[in-house]
Length: 264
Image (tube, rainbow, N blue to C red; front, side, top):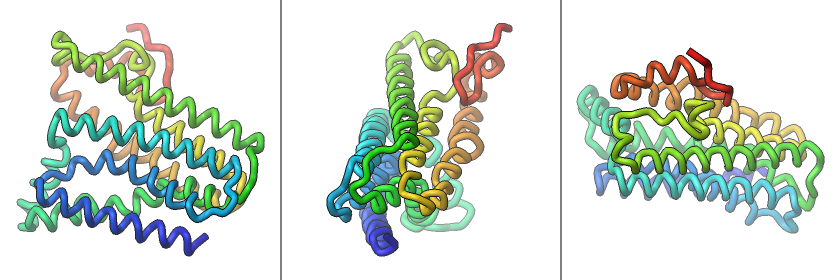
């Protein structure tokens, strides 16, 4: 297993170097968000190629990871091609270049791509280990529960993203807050979908034994990222400043887990 994980890591490093070179050429690193999802799908694919006689357990983990990764990666890539450089990355790269006197190439490498390698690999560990150790196993009861949770997460995120895209496409929505559909029950249905998906994949993978319990660091870190670090907090900081109605939306709408809206 360690040898297989090592090969996956080397593959990931190689891909990150190529993408870094592309980002230097176009002077934009913000397509890294799309690769965050695609990269996990690739890690799952690299893992299953190293398994002989893969059974239902391995293919279930692979299928969930690839479905989530390709769907989200494509969504983020298309958003990047339509909207251009993400202002968050413009600020991160610009601030670092100014303070440290680094070139764009060095800043992009150290502030974006190098950081993503261990984080992506860690979050994807449950999928990688689950596939690599699954052999020809079928699905047990806990794995089925995890499968259902992951499917709910993928559906939740897909619907939430579609509703947001449709809302943004309406000229009358400019400057307003989406508070219908799934967004009526949680301010971040897409992040909640990620949360359910990766805890579900971890549950499926626990069938292979204790190594996946060590890999719980993956969904734990992702949960922290979504709720406390670069997910909801960073997005809401921007929305509070740019959309006056967002404060009222916060007061009546759950911050993460879907709940009935409060009556004010």
